[in-house]
Amino acid sequence: MTASPEFWRAMRRYAQDPMAVLGAAIVAVLVLAAILAEQVAPYPAHAGAFVDFVNANRPPDATYLLGTDGIGRDVLSRIIFGYRTSLVLGLTVLGIAVPLGTAAGLVGGYAGGRAEAVVMRITDVFLALPSLVLAMAIVGLFRPSQILAMAAVAAVWWPWYARLVHGMVRSIRLEGYVVSARLIGASPVRIMVGEILPNCAPTILTKFSLDMGLVILLGASLSFLGLGAPAPIPDLGTMVADGANYLPDQWWLSVTAGGAIFLAVLGFNLVGDGLRDVFDTTG
Image 1 (cartoon, rainbow, N blue to C red):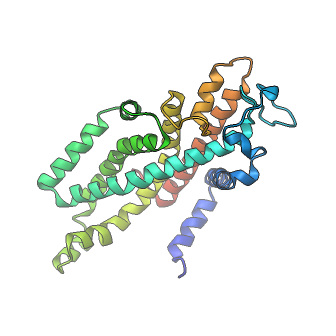
Image 2 (cartoon, helix red, strand yellow):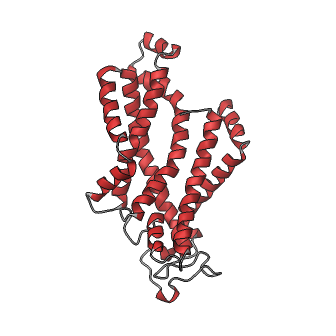
Image 3 (cartoon, rainbow, N blue to C red):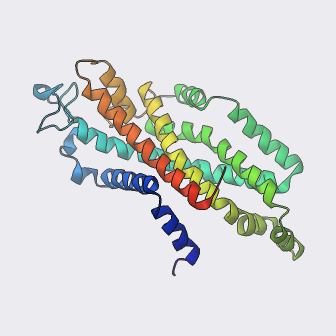
């Protein structure tokens, strides 16, 4: 199966944007580093329950490129494994939120009437509450864990996709090809999945790329507040919080972890901006 000419034209337009290419390169490096963490991290054992007080709080040098933390663990190794934690969080959250929100938006936008009113009022309730506050409330009810953090962020993220898809469906459902499909007897599910959804896909993909960075940032915020993955799991937000206790003397603990979060968010934002230009989406 070969890619369509439209796909290759889109890829050529994407490749002509230097910032988009830079974002793709950043994301590719981070993903590969996360997948191959055991092979590329200088000290893989430092990602677990490891203690070396002799080398505790060691500044960056040739042996430890980004220094060590308060119990002697290599910061660079933990950042690499922290990327794995962050990417798993982002993919899991959006893997739940995107299908759920898209389905809700499709049904509400196409069905109209009472179904639309119910779906959108539920969506409005979630959107009325700040994402971080709602996620904190959900996680705070139970013992913090990585799974709970993912569930909490997913619970606050799906309404954005429901609102986005609902608006697009409302503008598409009266197009000629949708009306024609309805007149020849196509079922509502066939129309929504086969006719409407493909036209929403570019905007959804663009938002997915942009949201990966935002989800990583929200997950790091929860971890910074002590509501993320428990120790000794490497987590970028937890590393920033732990390093704050040693500022300004051991500056590298927070600065490097914070820079790692910034790099991930920047990469995904550049990719999303590039896709938005390629697809000419405005959502």
